[in-house]
Image (cartoon, one colour):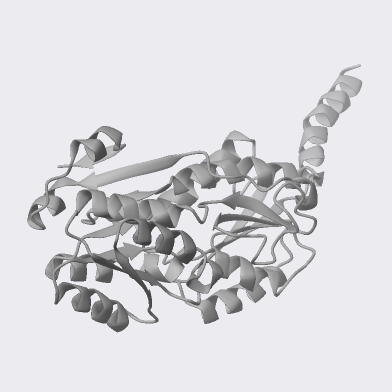
Length: 327
């Protein structure tokens, strides 16, 4: 009797271990568009991993996450995209237009969930927003009409602006930089402001564009985003301050770091929302059947210290709408 009890007890102890051993560890690839030393980008990624943990996916237990950082460099994005695809992950989180392009060039079968992509239809990632149709789906961060909103806000806080440069890197910006231009040009015309595209490919070119704006009165800057611009945002912020150029940005953290004004999507919210999509794919859902999601959360931020340094008085109309006011 004791022997039977011992064997039964031993079986009860062994079976759960064996059952756990049979559960495969799933693999998630993550290709970040920016630099691994960027605290904002790391904070955004942590929101994604926290979201996965809440859904039962713990790195090192039932999932292994392979993270790569491209530093805003398109050639490095391509190299790392191939590296990740060669690992054959179950799903990949892609974090920008240029990164998604690099991944799509490497695979049409591994599921990809993107964040911080503006125009996935025209970029060829999906057939349509409600019906992606392939191996890619995700979360749009901004619509084309946002360009006009940036111009309106900039002239509202800096009424003396008569001409604006629209800065972007053609290699990493939505539509090569053309995505926002129609709405920017329309808003500029209605406000009697001159607008011009200002493509940049290096930190030196950023300095040239911003410095030239500061040489004449009435210059303003619209920073449309993209991974290259994000990686080099410190150059933009410092040069704009040095040359007394009012600028509007697409991210709240640019204002926290010294920028004048920003209006855009909450990037952290998109990373959080991406976790359930990855979870659904790990449970068998197909990207083709998961609709592309539009942004749901927008943020307006203003830096009063920067405004004072530029000799600007922030109007109540902006202060009342601001989600964050930095003293």
